Image 1: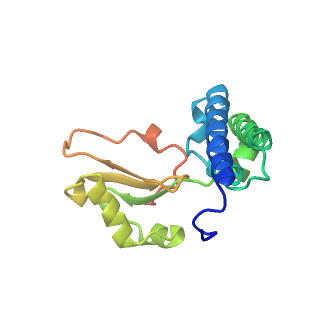
Image 2 (image 1 turned 30 degrees about the vertical axis):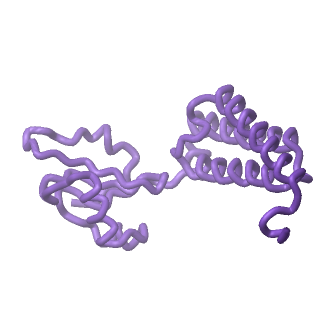
Length: 177
């Protein structure tokens, strides 16, 4: 048989067993570490998620990578993520070094083209996010924020009596108006 279709049945079984074992390991380690393990709240979380995915792929696809080595590597990455989370909560300097600041892209229906340019978000991407958020009228949008995770939050309402709390905008680089 052609090698790119099937190297050997033993390789298939090794991959299957490795997949099961590393899957169980990631469940156990993430259960011990807590809900934040795969949260996407900062660039450290993003890097940890990518690293864990790479480790899982290496263990599954490379028969020379052991399940224990992969499990230890995953536990190490998650430990570093937890340490980073602790430092971020307890050190403003560390938080400033490792976190980006959320940026307001639209405020009270007015687009900030300077902030779009600064963040690399296009006007059409912004409008797509408004559509995804079911914002029917741009004048009903209080604020659109590019979060530190790369997600875009759309704060809108059709009720004119609702006011945007400034607490919600804590830490956001606001549009000067």
